[in-house]
Length: 301
Image (tube, rainbow, N blue to C red; front, side, top):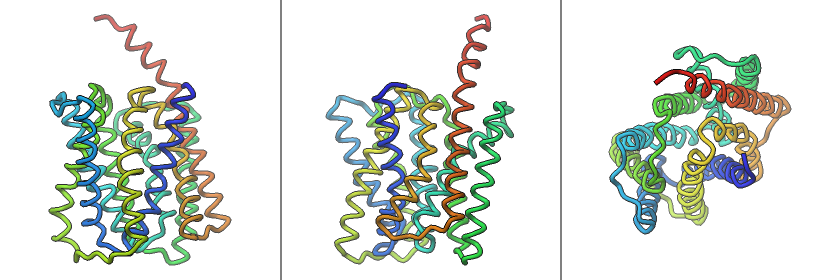
């Protein structure tokens, strides 16, 4: 992994993690699904326009169309939509911690459903991740956290995990910015249908809403997603996913600085354990990849 890939990974993790804080600000002044639908509409149109200016086409490969539709629904509509709803009632730091467990869930599902073996380091990472989340949740439950908000975040991260498992190997083929833009337009279409059916639409114009909406549209929404797709193409999904171990740290830190969310000693310990667990799982999967590639290369035909 070269210096450019490391810089891209760090930038992605920071941008992506900051989205929970900006979302928390947005839902105080606007209905969650409607505001997210508008955000994806703007980001998607910008993404498609940039892609066309770069000479990219919307004539995608079948794998890219499959990835675009599934990610548009599962990531943009379900995962982010449910998180936006949940952050009406729970803190951004807790939402970020729950969302950051996605790499652990992907590894756990790969082991349980597809028989993928992990190194001992990977199993230790899974156990640590579960322990860390349990520690954090125990402290939040004792403090009276909203269970509906937690449940929505859990469903959201499960949807993203399912999409990630379904789309392994389907990100190649170029047209990266076009894929990003179309994913967002698909998510926007789904949310524009869901919003009037599930919520009372309102917008209270404030400077903080304008600032948070502009930031989340351009930075986590468009820039971070584009960097992520480029990173996947540059170093592959397994290595790129290693940077997810930074998400709980960055997500909690940004929420603490900008929103003043307080963390107790057990919260800090839980975040550290979850972070270590994610890193261990990703390092174990990264170490196993060369063996899998050699095994495939050794097979005839």
